[in-house]
Length: 349
Image (cartoon, rainbow, N blue to C red; front, top):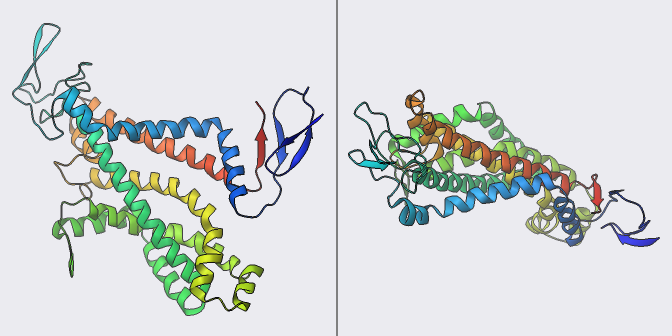
């Protein structure tokens, strides 16, 4: 009989026992020990680790898009090869046939996944499109998390008319489905861009769908944060801070915000997946990224009319989109379980 550290204390363990030891997690204070325990839980969640690694692999491949384009494909994402002829197994094949059908996957360094209707390398555009979709998703998620945290914190802490005004704004945004509201904002801003004082954003900039997606999802994150702040502001440590003469800003920044960290960490991967999916939907409908710029949504839109003769034009970006969002969601679920203090600590080998 020996003692083993479970993250919540030392418990006796029979070394002759075979299997996994489930120890109920005890309540603990937020701090470094909390995240060490969460990391231990996450490390033993093999499903979350596998899908998280899959997402990291997609990110690395997209970041290496310039390397692939320059040294392997020897072309750019917008370079057209309509008139070129390929030598495949001793046969001459047009990149785009006279009937408008592009060449399919050749499994060689050139046109590995085939070409699109304009003779552009699909694999190169797929990787560059992933860079665009991931960049928009990350920036939009950052906008959503920051705005939702600030508004939810202010509304929950001050209450009264401040909470009433902010909550009514949330209700107005929440009254419209996220996709319909994003389409309306995207179309209106895509035609004329944004011009507010010194801020000038052209109509074709990826910042427009980024701002639209970031703003549309704010109520969905701010509502739960506001609810937690309403409960936290009545806790003893907040009352003690008020008794010590702390300002409202200091109480929110140093007492309440650190207790929201776990919630925000859980929201980030889930919101990232939602942002990537919404960007693809907007770009597919013409209200997001504008051609010839590549994103997974624009690739889906350009490949849909040729699905009967060239299904790979649609299947390739759709597969990347599914793998990315599935990896983020499964890893996010594992992260939520790891940060849940009511979960069990799973140790053993």
